[in-house]
Image (cartoon, rainbow, N blue to C red; front, side):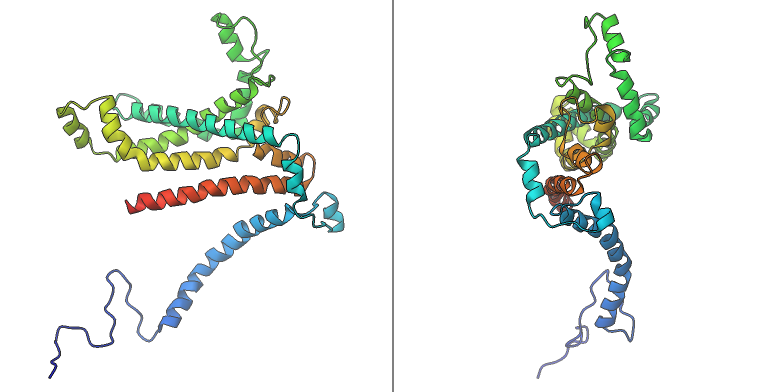
Length: 321
């Protein structure tokens, strides 16, 4: 005859999972799910209204002939893929994609390398290091349009301070058209975007560096691993999750940059600084072809979505590790 163990749970009873809140007496699983969805409902409504609806509306507008007349007539004929064909077969599609790629890669390389170097520099303790780190956040504190106006004055061909300094140092013999020449304009815009993005990179890298135990460097120093060897075998492997997050978020932020380019060059000269984001803006709010602008925005959204998915995958892998 089978004997019952006094310490074993009764048959059919579920063992309590550690960490789960005790179920309220008299409330079944169905009521628990109802309460859960009741708490989730405000967040779901907020996401649907302020994130879901604009995205769905933009996707639909990309396939409609949506102009200023639509506001009066309410009519926006369905045109299917016509707006996308107009953009991809237009004369500026290649230039726009190339400028977007150069602007994104140049900005990310500059922000990443300078941000990492500055974070490594501030890892060492020295007088006024805290004050200097705080000053690095100034680009974040300034409104973008104000910072852009200052840089527009610095890079002005005739009265800009940069040309004055270069000419006084006899590094150039004539004024450089930083913003008015198709050969220099895109690189000038990249420099300004790098300046704005450095604080973001420094903040993340500095936080990552604080998580590396000093004992690892001390043990490595005993074995002779200092300087570049310590960076290669200790710092870089420990910073790898932060590096991936910085790169992916930096790409997403850079793809959407509009105000810096519009404030400095307006997309010119000769469309030399035209990117996907500025093209969408000008189609929508300069040409008032909202359907065409929505189609370009959807292309930009797909590109950003690819990097967002990559970010989520990398972030999940970093959490598992």
